[in-house]
Structures are given as structure tokens and as C-alpha cells.
Image (cartoon, rainbow, N blue to C red; front, top):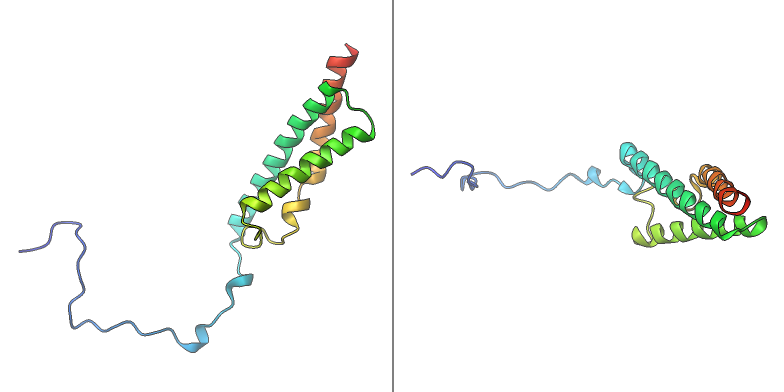
Length: 129
């Protein structure tokens, strides 16, 4: 009787056992990266960073923060986002990003531009007009 279609089949008893890999296969994979996965992670990090910057810019504008206090608010939210992501990756960003500093500094200036745009826009809407 033949096994059902798609059922698992055991190898015949006379099949040779798998041999262990040769000693030359001892490769350090700590420096091997999947470039497409790291690029995907970086794009998602930048998306999150810009999104949080827009939200915090809106809040800072509505609250009427001006000058240095507005920039402190931006860096505080950027630090909170980076710390949250750092904890989310188990405090080991190396497998997910090319360098561990990417999670802290990558895309901060791009996010700051979005923050300033929405900060000034909402400040003008609420406090000037």
C-alpha cells in the first residue's frame, strides 16, 4: 500500500547517514549580512523616526514650545524612539543593522527637518492665526 499523497516518507534503511561538514566550514558568520534585509530595516527605522518627529513636532507646536525647548523636545523623542527600538531588538542591534550606531543616529537629521516643519506649522496655526 502506498503512502497518502503529500505524506512524509522515511528514507530507506540502506540510505547513507549524513556526514558532518568538513573542518574548513568553520566560518565566522558574525560579519555576514543580508544587504536587502538591512536596507529594509533602515528604511523602516527612517519611516518610524520621521513619523515620531512629525507627531512630536505637532505636539510641540500646539504646546507653544519655542527656541531651545523645542529642540530639546525633538531630541528627547528621538532618544525615546531609539531606546525603545534598542530594547525591541534585545539590546543586540548588530544582526539587524550594519553598525550598532545606526539605531541611534541614522536618519536623525532627516527627521529633524520634518519636526521643524510641523513644529512651526502647528505653532503658527494655534498661536498666531
